[in-house]
Amino acid sequence: MDNQLAVVDVATQELMKLIDTGVGPVQMYASYDNRYVIVANQGSEDAPSDTITIVSLETLEVVKEIQLGKGAHGIVISKDSRYAFVTNMFEDTVSVVDLETLEETTRIEVGYYPNGISIN
Image 1 (cartoon, rainbow, N blue to C red):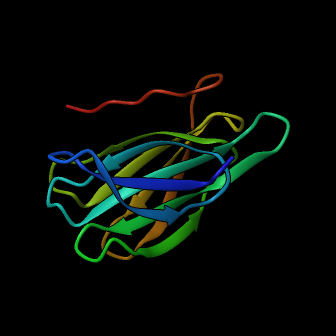
Image 2 (cartoon, rainbow, N blue to C red):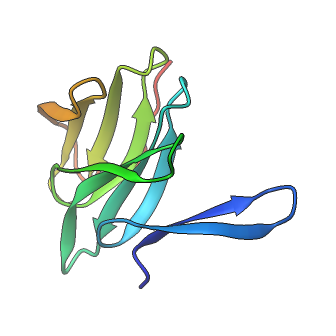
């Protein structure tokens, strides 16, 4: 496992850069204000990871890795780009991350094995 995010020029289909992430990156989501891409680092059920990697879209560098619940998987971002919501599959929770402070603000217990998430 490479534990990296690949940045590809869609016009030329050429690899521009590889960005190191946490263990077992599985999903990513871009903020509506084009400030960040957030990568969920799930790991595996036997060895779950518990982080997300926040990457600046301006610099294509890691801004911060934030520890959340076990098995970070699904991500969605509020339309105002203020909050990210991340499912923690192996902990049955959803983390709320403030994208201004880059900190987890709340962890909500939800049903069994949450993986996908959406918001209106």
